[in-house]
Length: 445
Ligand code: ADP
Picture 1 (cartoon, protein in one colour):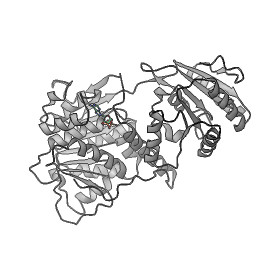
Picture 2 (cartoon, rainbow, N blue to C red):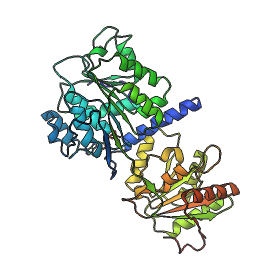
Picture 3 (cartoon, rainbow, N blue to C red):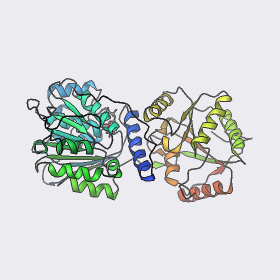
């Protein structure tokens, strides 16, 4: 298997313009999710299936055996610790492995088994005896391509005849040579070059085309066009598969352009709710007072784990420092860290090595807060116009109904403005947020 020479994961937050920052943040978030999801995300949501041909029998599988995979691949799957297909895999795998091949658009949140599913599909379809590229998978960034490549390598561990190449920057190849690797994973620009300028892949010989992270893809300037150009070169009978964590209209439009006659599978995200959360606010005058209140709250509770949200990196850094001075063992998650550093911090926190995590908003979306019993909004979430950011509030505090343990949320108010935001949040969710007097903390818990 051809390994890229330069496999470092760079900091993705130093975009030069707004557009770029947004995009790169999406890609960074996605990468972070891939790294920290070391097991399936729990979900009780139902899969929604829309078939291209409503008359063909719809079936799902409950075991990997039912898929009649090659022995080496079944071994690879079990070696990865998978016992049975995930929710989305139950439906997606039979469709992807069907004869004749079927096209698929699948949407489900990060961590539900999409990557594993299409990796298995590509490995199954490959003919190892043929020494040319048969499966093409495109991903939005260098780092995401590497991450997916790792999954294919791992799953194909007992199937060494199948080789994988990375079409990413830095992997320079000679014009006109023919690639022997059966599977190629890469970014749209390099893949396009390899198919057109360098002609080292013959697009007419591709039988499976996978477009991963479509939502991140279309957020990147140029990627959408490049993906469409690649798709146009493929034969009609090539199987087209598209995956995305979210599905706004723009993603949908793109998906329909690159995947003709698709089957569609959707797995709804579990709704978050504030029902099991006790919400409070504390009145303070400045950061110092907020800090004192925070220490009081923390001291009064036998907290399992707490997460503290700040608006800026600067506040987060300062607060983490102050808490450390007070003798707390604190973890800090901040924007200047690389994705890998962030993943390491999240991993330690999950393992309980630190009890308190101070973070800015940008960094925290990937963290599953189910285990965290207390969430403190040191600063309230607001959008760039200074209005309440209700979605982020729900995301920070909310729990998914059925697994939801009880939790406490404390909002720190230090100005009319933040009071205003609090009122907006109260109104939006139609739930009262009670005042907490930090000198009498008996009422909490
Ligand atoms: P997605 O692409 O939707 O983000 P992944 O395919 O990366 O999801 O899967 C998320 C995590 O769950 C990975 O750690 C993966 O190894 C694991 N996983 C995937 N499928 C299964 C399965 N059937 N059983 C157990 N774990 C699985």
